[in-house]
Image (cartoon, rainbow, N blue to C red; front, side, top):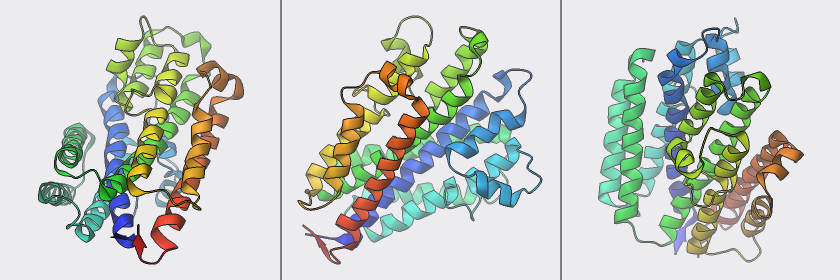
Length: 321
């Protein structure tokens, strides 16, 4: 038996930690490739898309009424702003707070790694993080998140606790993958004159790198980078660990570990997501409209979060079977 509040903390611990890694991932790629971009590209064109990806445009405008988008402002908001609940600092703090609640459900090694990670980041971000130091910091974040999830793989029993952790991390990963592809594809698609150019290759490569998929793409597909192949890898490839299909498969396995609610909405919502990803080709998605497809997927993914809350974290006011 597991208390609903324990299940919820396990879910949010890994969901917040996945958000930490994802946010660092998109920031890292932008910082690393800042100097490689088109000479005519402005800070605005390079950095505003990140605000759209993480849904921080409104908050940014509140903080900066002049509307100017700069690399330092975006790094500050998404990395260390304590009033931004989605910043790396805030998300890591929330992950650690949830880990404290479930210390008896995770291994000592996992708790120690996460606690040390939090203390190091909290100390490091007490001063402003300049762009020239950001890449090193984001690399540190990637290593620490990977360490935590590696320890969970090697030290945890494959039971309910592990299942709720997997649900949290995979749902967050699917959400970010869809957002990155939606925003980046919209920016890359409009200029057919750039297709096949060095800039075109750089931009699509940056998209794949933000999903840790550049090497996987080059092994799988020969020749240059084609949008239709990127869509196939990122949405439909079950062997690619950041694809929507991989995340869905993993969430279904995780649900089997925690136990289905026969009358609950979670299995039904996962079924809707499954229907969106099965028996569809990349060309089908493009014909329908990639933005429309991803928008619908993200809406159902949000419904899944609501269903988990109702089926497992609230309605039963006590135990998860």
